[in-house]
Amino acid sequence: MIPPAGMAIAALTVMLWILWSDTIRARRSVPVLYALRVALYLIMAAVLVLNRIRYPYLFSTAASVLVALAAVVGVLGAFYFGRRLVRRA
Figure 1 (tube, helix red, strand yellow):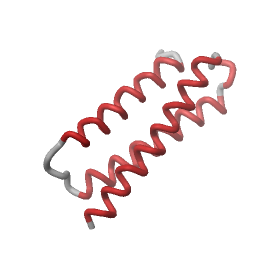
Figure 2: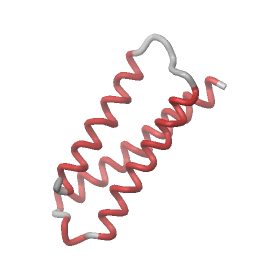
Figure 3: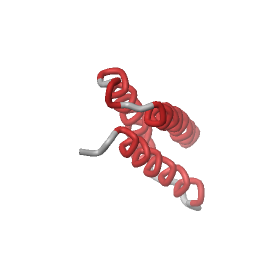
Figure 4: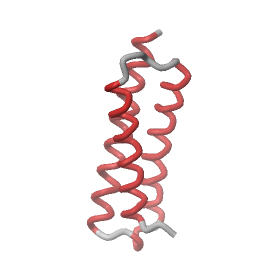
């Protein structure tokens, strides 16, 4: 089983990599992909926060900070892709 800090680090790695790869891409993706990314970012942020609330005894202070950071990146990433989706339409 992945510890809470490992889950948050993995989520941060994937979310930041997707953001980075989208910023360097010259050609824009299809709108469905942007909508999928918005959903993915919001769902991942919600799952991390829900696990933190549901199982507080599993989270150290550092793991809680990583979860909060991953949730912020998730919300900001969803906002970024949502803007690109709306701007594209």
